[in-house]
Length: 400
Image (tube, rainbow, N blue to C red; front, side, top):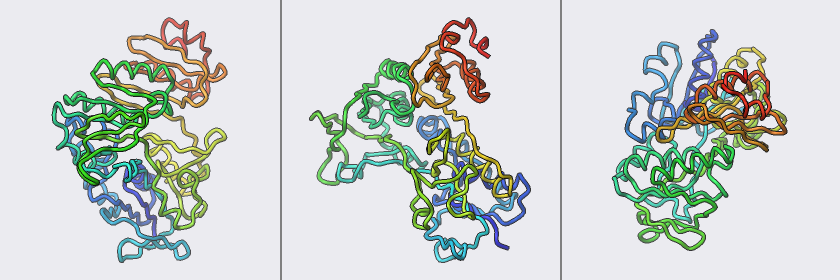
C-alpha cells in the first residue's frame, strides 16, 4: 500500500508524522532522517547541552518505542538521493520508495565561512547538530581564547556558555549592532551590556577577513579582521545564520524562493508534495518569508498534516521565540520588521515594546514572563495598545 513519505526527521518531520497519526491517518508513513541518531530537538544545543547541563536523553523528541507504536517507519542515516515526481518515488540508497503524498521537512544547515577564508580549519565550529557540539567539547578548556563570529541569538548563546565555562570570549559582528536582524536596538543594548558584564568583548561593525592557522590547513590560531587586527584564538565558533535545505526539492523541479515555496496550505508547486519548517518560505502579511523557530516548525507541520488529509486549513502564524543567556530568559512575541518606536518597561524584569506607526508589532521580555504573555495575547488577538498606554500602565496586565 502506497503511503506518505516525510523527508527530514527533525522537529517538523516528527511533528508532521505524529499529527497524521493523531488525526487518524491509516496509510503507511515513512520518516527519513539523514543523521544516524534518533530525532532530537536543536534549541538546547547552544544552551544547556553545550553547557553540559542537559544530557542526550533530554534532547530526544520521542521515545524509541513511539515510532513502532504509531506504525511510523523511521529510516535514519540514509539521505534521499533523488525524487521521481512522474512515478511518485523517492530513492533511498538502492531502494525506491513509492508515495501518494510527499513532505519535505528538511530544515536548515549552518552557514559556514568560505573554505578560502579558513572555514574548514580544525578548531572552527558551528552549533547546528549534536555532532557539532560533541566535536567542540575537546576545545572547551577554561582559559582558552574563543572568538565567536556572528551576533545573532546562536552566537550570543554560544558566547554566554563559553564565558560561563571560563573561556576568554570575543564576539565579532559585521553589522552595526548585534541582533540587527531579529530585535530592536534597545533589546540589543540590553544584551550587549549583559555580555560585557560577564566578561565578553563585543566588536560590532567589524568584518572578518580570514582565519589564521598553521599552514594552509592547520589548526586555527587567530581571526584576521578586515581592519588588519588579528584576534588570537584557540577555537572559533561561527554563528552567521542558517540556510534552508532545499537542493533536493530544487533538483526535483519544485519552485524555490528563499527555501521551498509553499502556498497558504503548505503545498509546493507539485500538488502531491508539501513542505514545512525551516526549509519553507510562505506568504505572511503580503511578503514571502521564512520563520526559523521551533514554534513554526511544529505549527506549520501540524497544519500541513491536517491539509494532507483534506482539512483545507490556511497557515497564519503569530511568531514567537526565546533565548537563554546567562540567567536571563528572553521571550519574544511578534516580529520587529519596520518598527519606528520602542517603549521600555520595568516590571520586575525588563520588556521592550516595538511599534510601527503607532501599532504594536512585537514584545521582547527579559525575565518578564507576564509582559511576554500580555504582549503575545494582544498580538494574537490582533489588538494594539498605544505607546502612551504601555508607558503609563501601572501594571502590565492593565494593558489587556
